[in-house]
Image (cartoon, rainbow, N blue to C red):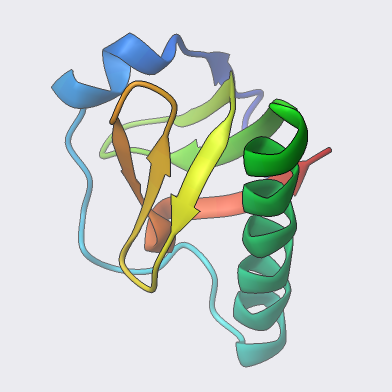
Length: 94
């Protein structure tokens, strides 16, 4: 089980470092993450609904509450144009 995530402001994301490896190991978890991110994007675009994204940077587990505007295979674009690597996200909470 991961350590308790540090609540992080989305403005802080630009100063964080992210390894290139994926935090998830199995295909089913990765598929679920993609599906949840797509739902988060729809909620963000249609209703301006915020979600919590749980992720791991170079050093610790973190959580950011934000609106997801766009999702591709590499990054998630958050409100304000901030990018978060998909491979570092391990949980989406609606």
